[in-house]
Each structure stands twice: as C-alpha cells, then as structure tokens.
Length: 213
Image (cartoon, rainbow, N blue to C red; front, side, top):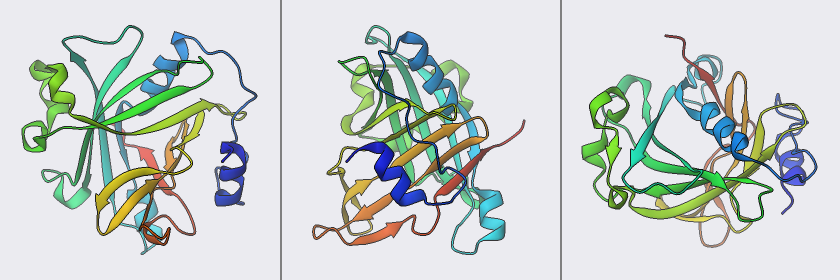
C-alpha cells in the first residue's frame, strides 16, 4: 500500500496527520545519517501514559554500534524497549542497519533479532563494548522503508504484507513510523493469520518523546 494513503487512513486528524512522504527523490548518505540521528537517544511514552490509561510508560533506548564488517554507507544501531518501571528487563531488543535502498529513493531500517538477547541488556550504557561481531546481529526479521516527510523528518512503513513475528499470539507485525524533532510516533500492530489485530495501536499511535538528560 502507498505510504501516504496508509498514514492518512490510520492517522486521521492526529498530531501526525499530513506527515506523508515527499515526492520520490534520489537520496544520499546524509539521509541515512539523519534517520539514524532521529533514533539515537532515549525516548519514552510516559506523557502519553499519564493522560491515557490505554497506554503504559515505555522507554526506548538506542545507540550506535560498530560491527566488524560494516556495509559501506550504513549506520548500525542497538535498540531496546522496556517498561519504565522495569528498565533492567527489556521486553524487546534488536540491532538495526540503517542504509539506502537499492534504488536510492528510500532509507531502510533493517531489523535484526540477536540470538542471545541477555548479553545485550543495557548495552548503550557500556561505552567500551559497542564493537560487535557481524554474527551478533542475528537474524534479519523486518524492514521499515522511510522517505522524507513534507513536514520535515521521515515517514515510513513495513512491507504491505507485514513482517513475521511470534509475540502474544500474533503471526504478523505491521507498523507505520513517523520520525520528527519531538521524537517518534508508531502504529505498531500484531495480527493473526486471518489478519485480525490482536494487540497494538488502535485509536492513536504510540507517542515517544525525547527524555532530557
């Protein structure tokens, strides 16, 4: 599905309405760096959770890592999510490879699931341990394709069919992601084999906002 149509249909009049991508253009290395910089740091959904009981306070922590053999022009990140009340017990951990798509018209955030997640807990706080082996990245499980937004930042989505997942009964994951100055908003949804939504965003996206030092 066209990203602009998907965003318009899902978002409606929410704060990210109008964040559809700009016309297709050939992007350069600066776009890869911009997407990575939109992700690196600490964001939380605490403000959203404080005003909407349907949401819980989640922290997302992202930092840059250095694989032994990096793809030219790509940026590699480690990312983990945890409940704010259980920061030492992340429920989702992954490595990301941010790189230009083959046609140069999109930036792809490629998600890898490490085989042994326990050894990476709190990696962003361990300055001396961010050099990793390529095998540590694990299995590639999903890709979000992003383009510059007409409002600034980037907007993108998973493939039309979603990405395979085994989480809380879901078989497929779909997501729309908007990166902008204040943080990130995501429509993360888990679907069963019949396409029925089992969990994730419904009436509004998850609203991640930067946490100040």
